[in-house]
Length: 175
Image 1 (cartoon, one colour):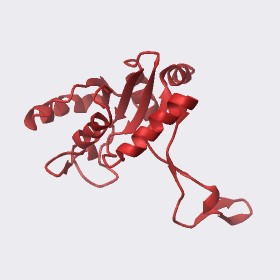
Image 2 (cartoon, helix red, strand yellow):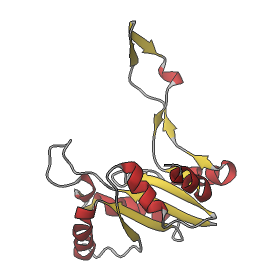
Image 3 (cartoon, one colour):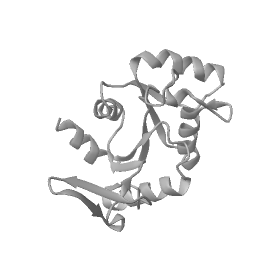
Image 4 (cartoon, helix red, strand yellow):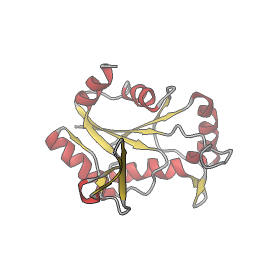
């Protein structure tokens, strides 16, 4: 079965108050995005990487790959105006049948075990999304005021989110 990773890296760095987009910040001497891509290649050398970036960052990404001698094969795709459209653009390069992971380009510390479990579960069930139980107290604000939420009943959604290629491509065609 074909394996894909659509790695979406559309950040601008504005929320962090920096000029450099987060995906291009250096971590251990190289841009974060390079570490993220290598994590998926470490999981499977056969995985096809599809890197989605804003159009105004494509040339800089090419420069950085040359500067750091980064040679991991990938398809580089122009992103959309929102994450939804960036993922949709990346999915155009995914063939059916297969499994596709959608992952944030600034999440280089995902474990190989998590990637593996997500692909294995998606192969069996059609999709898989890793979650974690929140450690913080949670509240919901309603018209009646602030109500506590039992954090054991809540989950924080993580990436990679792995899907049957056919399933996710059909879902994105609905919009």
